[in-house]
Length: 638
View (cartoon, rainbow, N blue to C red):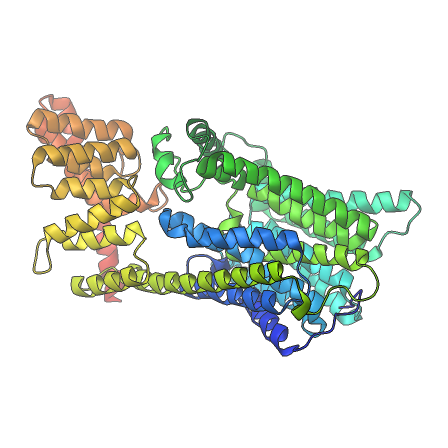
């Protein structure tokens, strides 16, 4: 990649070279590891390797934008108080940490290590290309045209959000490249990434992609009308991308069917988002000053939930998540992001004269912000990291065009004392964040092992959970899991220890309904047990049907028990067996409970017609579950 200015002299190029090499490794592997979300390797890369690379790069950097330094310092300070927040907020903060970390690594790479900078776009595009090829391989294995491409991300909407940044990155690589063979490789990569984006069947991403392509086409037309020659490569790649979209729409029936539903505002997806957005706005209205705290939307939303069908742990919008979880401060962040993006676009446009690379950077960043405003893109570290790379590249283009001639900054030992103090503190905080991220990663290793092997001996489960708590004692769910095992009767049963774990869990997160329900189940005093169960149902009335069943079993008499069972059916009307394709597939394992539920209602009901109906429903649940167990036994036999 051709550089546009000379690099400042460095005393020890090995230092920044090592830092940016670590950054390049992280940028390549992050998309391959579940998109940088919820896996041990992804946590190591996003929470440890990338912040470490950023800390080293920032330490060796000769020229640091002061505004970026202040923002990063505030952000790093925030990392230190994360244990005071709910665990989900802590993890979200680390996912977002990938953005400034990638920004720093890219900035230092472009300014001080031009030899490594030549690898930036091959690494970024190569990682995206590997994931896309893997997604197509999965598509070929399924043999279904309507299969939604998910790659390593596991969720088609999240994968589409990443691709909205990845295909413009390939286009930028094409424009920055001088070698003909590499230009062809980048062109084909961009087309393949657009085709992959189409087959994610993410309708919001489709609309965003069309906006991106129309913006590029409008830019090319403006350049021609202004008498300036348009860049044929941009026009060519845009035409190729549009052709790929059109071919998919014309020849693939599932794409045609999805296109017919493009503006269907009555479907599950759009209606669900409307519910989540409405709830987020109501939360902001009720908690305008401080919000409900980072990561707490998942535990507050059930109090605003209207039925059991639509549930989410986030509002599917970075804007509304900031408003609901941080209140007025979140609103200020939203306004700052919008204003900062506008300022960045204006400077980039003026510095480059509206160049081809500038317009591609702009459509990538704006497209990502728009799509993430209606989805959860930024809970995947590979997406936030790629956004940081593109922002840093745009900033580099601006500063390289506007920097005065001659030496650009003093030597490191001549830097002002105040800046050196701030840099040292920031680097130290980044390293601390990496250490904390390592603890979080080790905890995740233990919990993933526990999740992957649910039939482990209780003693092994206890050992895994105790190790997880040694790494991270602020995860309320780990305390709850430990309590659920300690509360079981048997050799390892210890009700008092279970109750102590539940108390710790509720101190960390007093809105966690399952902990209240389990505490009510373990309570020696029936009145206290009923009160805890009632509080659990107030906190979350639609997402835990087993809580109603426990609540009914604590009833003082048959009449009250029947009332509680009917209350549960009123709020969660499960009249037929819960199958894996149900709107709440995690309830599949509760089919035996529903069978007992209806049999018990039949026993408590005097009306013969109702009694017969309840018996038939109970029998349906029981027969279905017996067929599931028989099928599993057959598979195990094989």
